Length: 309
Image (cartoon, rainbow, N blue to C red; front, side):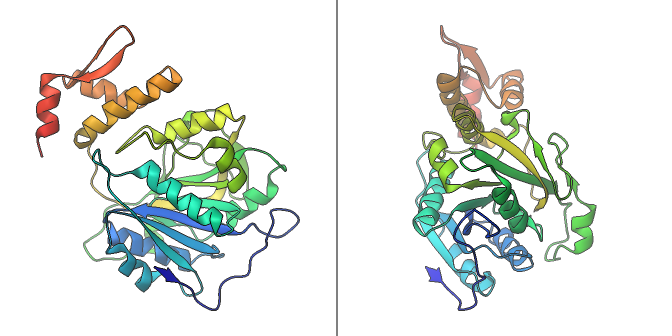
């Protein structure tokens, strides 16, 4: 599905000089239709529209209706259908398909934003400014702060006051309002909100599609960035506001995904990600570390928990 309006925001065709890079905003979703609606509303309130919106619909054909109804005027939008995998939602695959589509359409800067995030008014503008400030040929990735919104009454829209009262994630640095801050730990990268040039995307190789379901693919991407000699920058003035939804800690419903993906990661990089969750599962007797090359395995209790709806 393609929706194109006649008043698309003008864009530069290069990251050089004062022209802004041709930019695509990419998100992926399965359900979360109301979250997607607020993401699109936030884009419409922004100081700069991207040149293209790409939504990867994971086993959710109804998403196209949400995009058609709520995409801001002047923003070309395309919906890609990505089928579910037997292990769960194909997050890495969906990001890769969206990126490939955007690059083929001429995008020079890819802005990834999770479907449950509302973009700040300057998010696209600040990511474009960060890309323009990059040294030519540099392998850079940029990430704005993610703020957490409080619960709201059913049907009540978020207000400017809700956004102002939100707090950024405590474990990640926050750059000055119009500045950039070099990250000293690439393991803090996450895919909720980040931007990357098409050239860096190709150098890193995108997300490893061997990660299926929940967990591991973000840290793997960060390790690929490190291997390519890349840098992560925290971007000031580009907040994304995470819409409240219920979470489980540790995320037991993703137990099998986390065990499988953590073992894949360890086989590639020699250490386990998601240490806190793995330790919590082990403390609950759901998993155990065993083998000459240590790997996590489900215990009998873990198998029972994995079969519990």
